Length: 313
Image (tube, rainbow, N blue to C red):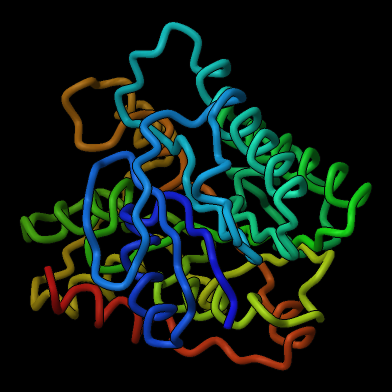
């Protein structure tokens, strides 16, 4: 029976992952920023993750680390130096954990990175061979964390796996998907009918199942995997699915993309400039490599994931 350490265990992804792994009888140590108690899980409060965090207690006896904790996208980021804040948590914090994991004798380190480590927009479909050009502080911090893990682990006996999920959605999802769902719930006509993009999304149920498959699979060692539901859709198509499962009308009308982009400068809109650019632009990924390498199939389609998500909204 493996002893797992799951960081950020009470966050969006962690809250869906814990029940899956607990049902498989793993011995689990989990960290959270909040002081919390969970049945059959050793909970450790870690208030701040950076280059100085002491992981010796939660790492005791651990064989596999699943590193979820990160500083993610923040809609209204008030940090004086956003780049430094992302690097402090996502890069320095990860590298510090990796070093201590190696010292503690951890056998496998699984880093949940992001497609943002490659790009936030791309006219071409991305795969594991595509070049990485992160264009945000978040993406650059994630890419640097990946590089630090690979360099340090390759100098040791610890195995590593990196997952780059696309935008993750599911019950309780934060961020842009949550805001889009709220917008569709209003049932109002939306000026998004003219968008002709292609985007990939990832149901949280698919992500946690992938993590569970990777834990003890030697075929995953030393691999970087892109992960999505496997169905690329335009923003109007996505809104159509959301409206369908919410039982709301889907009323879209076309507006030039240049005008839509300009709406992002209006501070009182639901979406900021960056979010609107992602609604308009494309970011699709090929998820075949992880499935063929691990002899594994994505459990849920995009439509199934959206239906399961929206039933709980």
